[in-house]
Length: 182
Length: 366
View 1: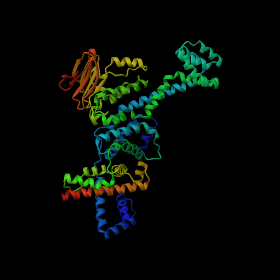
View 2: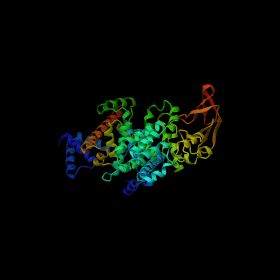
View 3: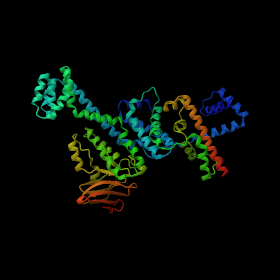
View 4: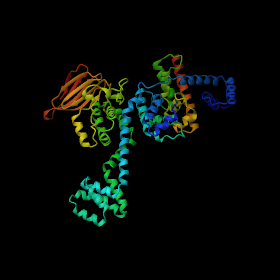
C-alpha cells in the first residue's frame, strides 16, 4: 500500500514524501478508527492524531516490521487508549440480554443483516475483539499481521476473532429472529 | 472431532487457514451434523457481511486538515536543530573567539566567561569587583562545579552554555513540545472535549494564547510566513462548543487561511518576523489576529476597538467600533453569532452578540 522508497525518503527528511505517504494511508487510518470508535467525530479526531504521530515518529519505524501493521498499531492504540476509554463497554455476557431488549422496542423486521446492525453489533464487542475484527475485515489482515499490529500472541488473535464472530453471530441471529417474531 | 475443534475449523475455514485435509474433515463432520451445518452457514454469512462492510473514507482530506499542525512541528524541529547547532559551534570556539565575543556579551555572561578563562584566584578578584549581587550569585553557581575540571574543558563548557543560553532554554521547550507533538493541539482538544460545550467563550480565548509562547520560542520566525500563517489557523479556530471543537477546516474551505482577501486576514497575526519576544509583542499589539468561525465561513479580527467580520468570499459583513477594550470574542457553535465582551468605563463589562448574517448586534448583559 505504501512504496518502500517513499518511506525511506520520508525517513531521510523529505517532507513532501512524508506528506504524500500520509495521504496514501489516511483512508486506512480513518477506516480503522471509524469502525473501532463507531462514530465519525471521534474517528476524525483519532485519525488526525494518528497521522500527526506517524509524522513525528516516522524515524522510529524499522523495516523489519511491515509498515501497514506499524501504522495500524498506532491508530488502534490511540483509539483504544484515548477515545474508547471514556465509553461504557458492554461485557460479553450481557450481549444477549441487551440485544433482545432492543429488538422488543424496535420490532424491526429484517431479511438480512444490515450494515448498520453489524456496525452496532461490532460496537458492542470488547475493545480488542473489535480491533481484531476491524483489522481482519476492514484491513484484510492475516492472523500474523493482526498479532503484530495489536502486539498480541497469535493464538490470542485467533481466539479473539473466533469469539468475536460467535458473539456477532449470536447478536445478529437473535436480532433477526426477534424481528421476525415481533 | 470435538465441538470446539469444529468451531475452530469453521473459523479457520473462513480465514482461508485450512489445508485440504482439514477442509475435508470439516465437510465430513458437517454432513453428519445438521446443527453444526446451520451454525456454519450463519458464520459464513456473517463473514461475507463483514467483508462487505462499506469501506468508509473520511469526509475531507485529513492530511490537508493537519497541515498547519505539521508545519508547526517542522518549525519547532527547525528551532531545535538551530539551537543544537549553536551549541556545537560554541563547543568548537577557541579561547580567542570567546574573547572577541566578549564585548558583545551581557555583563553577567561576560563575568562568567572571564572567570572560566582565568585561574581560580583571578576569578575571585572578579567576584569582589562585581557590583551586582545577583550576578555574583549566578557566577558562583556556575563556577563551583568547574573548580575541579581542567581549564580547556571549562572554557568549552563556558562558551557552550553561555552563547546559547537562550538556545538551551529554547531547546528544552522544543523537546518537550515535540515529545508531546500531538499533545499540543489535539490532545488539548480531546481533553477539553467532554466539557467543551460548557464554555466555548473560554476556549476561544485560551487556545490562541496557549500557543503563543511556543510561537515566540520557535525563534526562526522569519522563515516561511505562509507556513506560519497556516499555523495560526489550527489553534485559532474556536471550538464552537460541543463535539465540533475541531481544528480542521470544513470541506472545501481548505485554503481559506492563505488567500482570504482583505487587509485584515492577510496580516500574519502574532508572528512578526523577529526572533525576540519584544518585537513579537509589538506585533501582537498592532496587528489584529484573524479567527475563523467553526464552519470556516466567517472570520473576525479585532483591533483598537474595531470588530470586523468578513465572509470567506471576502465580503465585509460587519464592522463597528466599541467603546472600550474588547475581550473574550467567541463564535457560537453554529457560526451564526459572535459574542464579545467590552470593558467599558468604571470597570463595567458589556457583552454584545453580533448577528453575523444580518450584521446587527445587541447588548446581552451588563
